[in-house]
Image: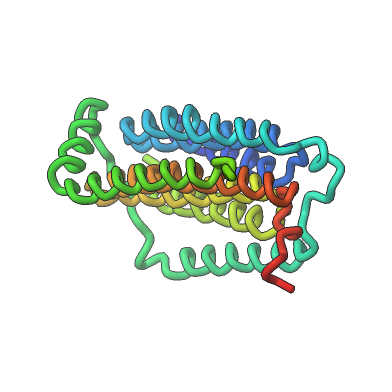
Length: 169
Length: 100
């Protein structure tokens, strides 16, 4: 019961702050609300006993990616954007299409509940066990993907530097 | 214990909000933030199904998704800086050189 209440609070927080992210005029406010969303999603990970992923979410997303976002928001001109229209010309069509997409997803999930009517199964895991299990999987079964991910990060780092570098004559 | 369906409905809701953000906003920065919302929705689904199948594989894939999000944010923000330097705008509908 307490778990369900926590879930409802966290999901309402996540959805409301996500809506605020895409509607605020000021990009700094959007970034702050995105931090709230990321914290709520992290709480949902914690609720599902994915403690390692919760730590990764906080450290990498909130600590890393959001700081990067705030830096760039400060670098580009926000004063001009404050006086311009927030939404593109096609917004009514886009909104209707997206709501339709949600309707289709919801209909499919609800209608095929035989395939997805997943009964809840209790998950007993201590924090150490979760981290241990993730570490074992990462360094044994997923050895090659981890190496590929590290190469991806290196390429992204070099690419970001090349993109942002001032052209020298 | 919360049914896994609830997590998947939450994931689809968050995904739809992200899609609305990508399709309607003009500011490229907000579009990138909406992509982060979409990736978080995917992570919620992955973790929920990983707990359901009592396998840690879904969480490992969620870690790879977070890695991709970091790489995407770095390259995307570099692109935005280059774009702002060349075109003096961060609005997606003003970047229409190829749309003539």
